[in-house]
Image (cartoon, rainbow, N blue to C red; front, side, top):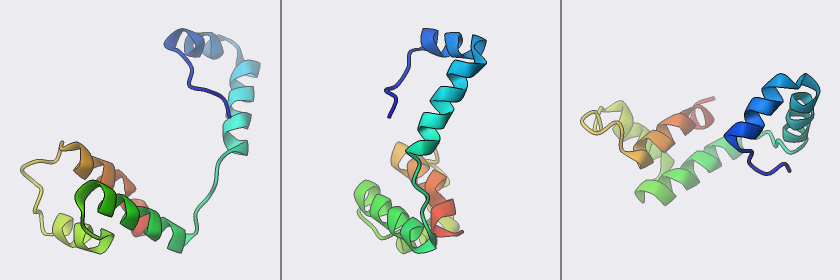
Length: 88
């Protein structure tokens, strides 16, 4: 897989559509799609890792508004971005 690129390299890619297409092709070749169950497992594992609670418990507490006072806390936002995996 292609290593991370610098801002300068990204600028160069924007000027070269063929090079940009190569980077996208490489990314697509290394993309793995998750089925519904795998997505739920991913979310549950992330909730346990970041918060020490199950994915189901995180969703219950998120839906109840428990973290409304601290929405920018990194572990919370990392999990919020993963919610579509838990609720396809």
